[in-house]
Image 1 (cartoon, rainbow, N blue to C red):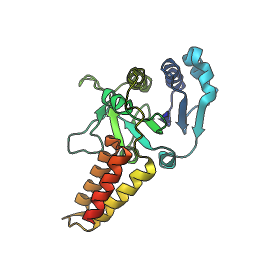
Image 2: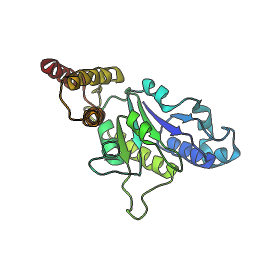
Image 3: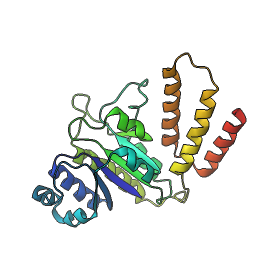
Length: 233
């Protein structure tokens, strides 16, 4: 189950265009976090065109991403602002790689695709709350896309992959609860290790969070990892 999550969208036209793209590619779940316009805005309805019925499916929430976290097994950040290999927060996979990964898992897994603000996008704290980051490769001269265009490309990549029957799509990746258990065990292990600074320890925490997110571990893999961590402990 994939949900599009728009953080503080400002332009109703962009949201309408996203609703249209969602209908094009058979996506039905969308959340607006603190939208800066009225959901009945005529521009939104006009841009949605024949997907205007999707407006009824929009869920509006007034709280922040942190409270949404508990409702999803995986939260996926999107960004055009990339970092170097040393910037773990902004070391992404491509939209095509993302689509390939989730095409191989059970569709009951709850995945939220988090789309940032029209101007600044997602901030570092919001990206940190997500399991991993996805980007769309674009020109180095101008790599930032309109949020409706970016969302359309991501949804298209997912749709294209999921239309092909996959013989391993029955495999269910670990849920949020199991990821939290592994992270707890990693934290217990880190506490017993010596680090020259707290910043170096925090880097390890963040590294493991992103590894767990990107891996989409199966339950068998997860329990094998838990067993390994228990032996280290």
